[in-house]
Amino acid sequence: MKLISVVDKILSIIEATLITTFLTVMVMLAFLQVVLRNLFSFGFLWADPLLRYLVVWVGFLGAALATKEGKHLGIDFLNRYLQPRLLHAARTTVDSFAAIVAFLLTRAAFQFLLEGITADEMDLFGLHKRLYFGVIPCAFGLITLHFAIRVVLDLHAFFTDKAEVAQPHSEKSQI
Image (cartoon, rainbow, N blue to C red; front, side, top):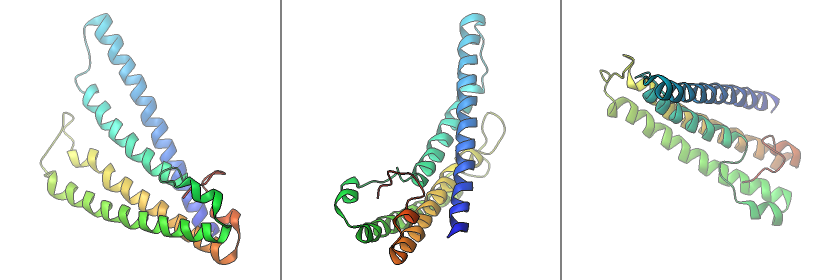
């Protein structure tokens, strides 16, 4: 169980670092664009498309991080009314269903990436568009992994009857 928790923590650190880096670049680049356009009537042609791509990356990585924190999907009223053992069973059921749906979305996103965006589609930088939109299947894969980890932790808590094991995400963990 400890290894699973460590892997989950490492993934969330990587996700948070990427989100922070991308947000910083976005703010600085957008600010620079405004200053350049207003003061010098000049701007970087590549900045606006890059900002759009970074918004997609931040959004999908944020969804993956929200899943890890237990804030992606919540049915809060069950937390108040169910006994701990039943709560773990309910969390396991909801997280299992969410993992299956996320897995199916991962497969569909990979199919879209391979079939919907041709290999010769390039952007303003001369890079393949698949590079930018590759975040979609990757993020759904991370979401699937986070839900699967939550299922394992909740099952462990259900069978060992330890409520604290099933709540690695936050103190106000929801299902």
